[in-house]
Length: 453
Image (tube, rainbow, N blue to C red; front, side, top):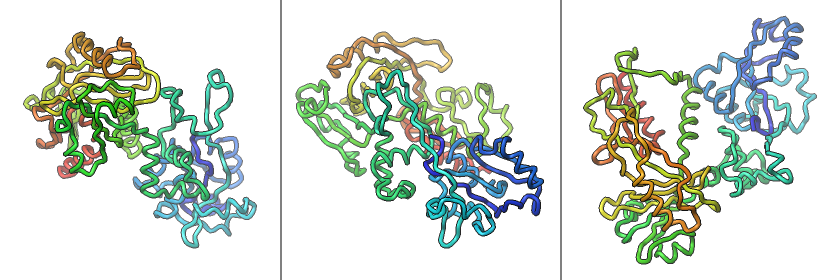
């Protein structure tokens, strides 16, 4: 889905068909790959005695990031999709056009010329010139007949077998599935906060979180109530009737419907792509032995379990934890967390896995270990988790199909470490618990770094 339904051509400076000859010898473009192909660019250059220089963007997000990053004046013409055209036109990132100086403008479809997405007040900022498809690719050997709706992406039987483009246009696709394009298709690009929240829920498929506790007083109900977060307290029988889960008689289940899962790999990639789009440089597979190797005014150190290699006295503890995967089919269920009656923290947890069905583990059951120490999955932990899966998921196979280990980095009170030592800003938000808060933690670390500059 590389282009939205409508593609608009917006000029950042007024350009006429003979502008190259009369003004400058170079015309700079920021366009999609293929929009400046030599097969047709060469004829334009010869006719107008100028040079076309093209830069390319991979997504609408990348385009906007480049313009907002201060490089708008580097381009004469940009080619955004309709999803961001109005925002560019109304936010001062583009200069208005004079359609009277474009000889072919009257030849365009009146319906295209009348579209409001490239207009602000009485000024015209772009030339919508074509419609294009949002393609849906499918495996013809798997589908008996072609899919007829975007809603196929939410069919449970295809869970774990679908990929969508990590781009703003996916938001509009979900909004279209929810019917927000009727009667005005342009409404997709001006969603209300309430509509955007529903789109977010549609994309994330927030299946909720179910806490299992011996007593309701051991649950997080009071903290949730204080924060104004919706939740339900259910007796064991009621929880069993709602979900195919084994909840012991006398226990209580607390259901939080707004909870969900962060796909770590996808989220990590999205954060990196956002940084790259804003001018960051990524150097992967580059080992750093000492901070003295780095020449920088500020160093932001977020190295997870390796943090004590650089800051030996940092009060963190690293452990090797074991997780196991189990085969389960059917509708996705809420994340299930059995709470520790003493600490009220997660004791055993399970969540939906797109490949096998379930991922489960015991919280803080691993031995102290360094990130570079050899280690294997703890057989005792795997057995304990398998027994719990057998009791809690009647429709799952309790024999694990895979096991793996991961590193926890925690403090004694499980709070995060965000501090500054000289020119080093230390971020140790402690493994998965902190990963959920990466954007806001990153903002805090950035503010601390800016204070040093």
